[in-house]
Image (cartoon, rainbow, N blue to C red; front, side):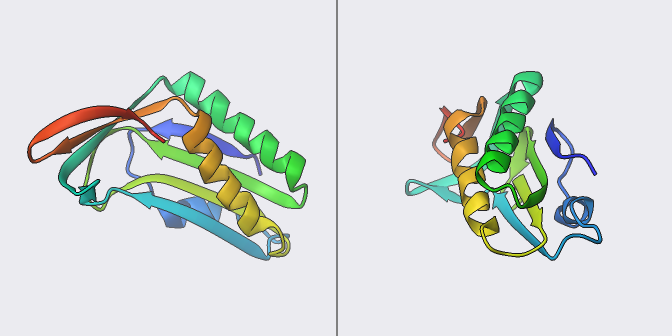
Length: 139
């Protein structure tokens, strides 16, 4: 089972992603699911628009996977998928799924993964509010 690092315009299915990291050796799967919220810094959000250079972003996601494996060698499978395009309130923007035989370390690895994604992956979002809009890094 290969790790997956993908940027897509497709709607994300958490169930499909979890199924993709689950096999007979796996006893623990942890996920982070980032969804579009309706407010940001006290402003009402209408929608978000994400952009990325997919090949560069996917290489950086794979780098995060290598870093996870270096720090937590018990992680068996890594999937990180980020959606781009226009996303409405409540839609899933990012899913990270990590699988291991046992739970020790897997929660720390998950926290590292999302923090690192926001730190280094070249994905930008435009927040569109009721009264304006602004492009921001995914941080």
